[in-house]
Figure 1 (cartoon, rainbow, N blue to C red):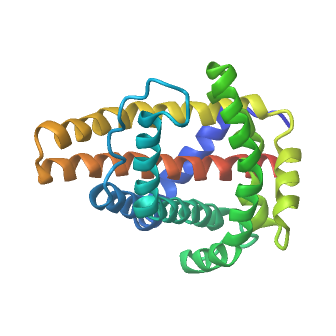
Figure 2 (tube, rainbow, N blue to C red; figure 1 turned 45 degrees about the horizontal axis):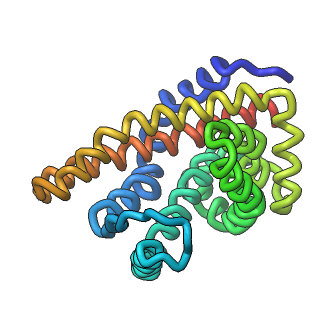
Length: 254
């Protein structure tokens, strides 16, 4: 079945208009607040010294690696936790729509929690090869980084819905199910995903730059908190949009 991007976006928009109160409640708890706490409480990666050599034994390279390793040991775990919580939040939103019977929000959260380990395992299974491809792409043809990421993400878009709607289904089986369901629609879904990523980047770029500028030149906790709230709101909205796109695509293709 061939889909149009307008159809998927229209279905996602219709779901938002109907259930925006439920969606904002789930996203507020699992997408907005953790991201805001991360921005407000966890220090950003410090500025790295200039690196003028590719030699790993160069003092500048060693100093940069030391700073990165120290920062990761202190704060990397918090970033991983926020990512996992956000993944669960999106997974729970999908669960509200694709479970065989339309569940209550509480039941959707419980079901998503019990199946989240499969979703995380499936995500790791396809993101590890993608990460290697991204690294090689950046080293050889940087312009292909985002298209390759979008194309692979398009084929994996329905992994979460498959785990929820066709349980019990394993992580690898869900990956195969997503690949089969998205056959013939990869370019369309990749375009939608890439458009969402670009929109999210453009909307958060001014607030991120403002936060960085204030941190260096005009430290004002209240102003920075307002900026961080705006950044977190955009990221949470993007998470809702991606979850609803998954739901819309699954209903048409699953």
